Image (cartoon, rainbow, N blue to C red; front, side, top):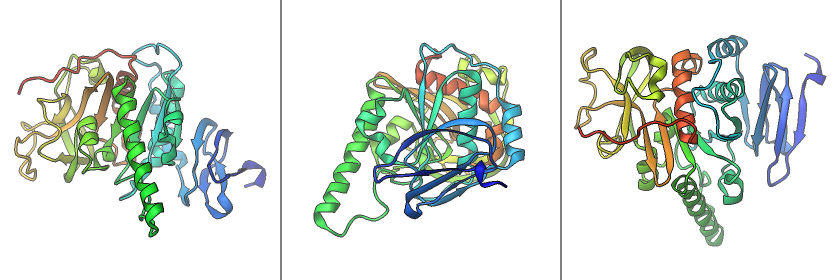
Length: 333
């Protein structure tokens, strides 16, 4: 491959924001001299903020083709204005191999339908108030762990306090962002993030405990009339993925509008240990003046080229953005 196919960008200490359009087979991000070399697998336009960690990102041509074939032609709602969506995928714990496929799929989903424009970042400084204000909603895409803090606290007392104060500030900024009227969406491991931060657990809706099932499972359509479930034509469906079980004090039917869940009439749930025997997969909610959508699907790459799931994601994201009206009132068990 000719060197001319690569774009090389120099990152300064504060990170950069750069729009990119390339036509090459992979993305390579290196922190050596803070040099970012990108070569995208298809002609796409993306915005990337502050990628300063070492990682190799490869999206195979077959996956790219499958994503392109699965994308819906139109969004279920017309955006009230041009929407800016932050896709955040930093991991401080387990890192899912589907992150890069998911980020590409969401980018193309917004671009093809005109529903939103994606900025993808793994730099937590994007949650500083002035930066966060540029977005209409945030997607936590397979984030894990305590993503607003350093991997290790500094040994120096003053530096440690600064890092702790920064984490507290970024956490408060995210809460205020949603509470004051913006949107939040989470996919799969978004609930394996800050599991001891109660406000985040309440806002996102669940806290991951385990994944008893990783196989083909039947999902029940709990809200056939919800526009967020329109992709399923009023029916349940089967899907192969890693299915989460949530902590008993979270993911409660009495607190949010459940959309999809494991179908107890069609599968053995004995591997589960949740007290209420409820195993939800997708839901919507409100948080202050803001809106929240979550779906636990997204462990496997093929989830991000499943046509029905992509339509569900799109509708949920448009709900979080405020462009798609849907009833999020919790139902009495």
